[in-house]
Length: 72
Length: 153
Image 1: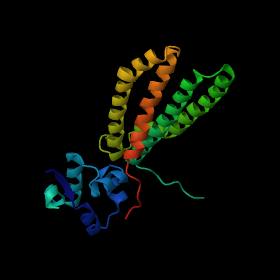
Image 2: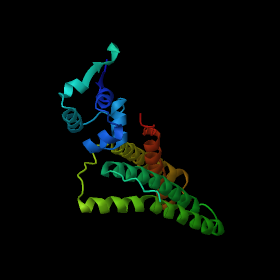
Image 3: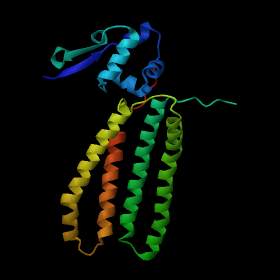
Image 4: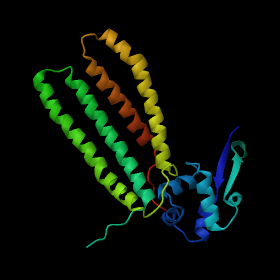
């Protein structure tokens, strides 16, 4: 039984009308880094996760949640 | 006149890592050619020497322009960037770990066995083979692991 880091970056991006490239520029990472975080391919560092949450003005838990794999 | 799109520091760092991996792949081929030069006749070796030079030059051309641009921007100190905060950097590090494993295996097992079974070949041959395999494992792992660049939604 493992855990997966789910995220709602895409939802928040859509709400704020931000492209991946724009968010990447704000956070200071590459677009590829944002896109791979969104699809769950890359687990971000705490610093990136906090920067993203800070940018959207929400607690980190609103964007990132741990999900057990057998719950999917 | 079309204007060249500007790259962020993070994008540029990703680009240099990708080009470095390409350069490493080209160097792997150059070392493989170097190994081949040890087992062929003089005429063929002279020809392979020229081919090897082409691959080395291609590796330098693949890396140098982006690297120069990166260093220039970095020294200007226009923006802060942490290389560890990157998906491409992460894949690059993983490829490095795998290449280290492959090099170790080659040095510990394949090298000694090869020298015992093929005593006529020069030590340079085995050095080139080990370097070629190590660099090939690195670059192939990198390009096989990296997520394809999909279009932005």
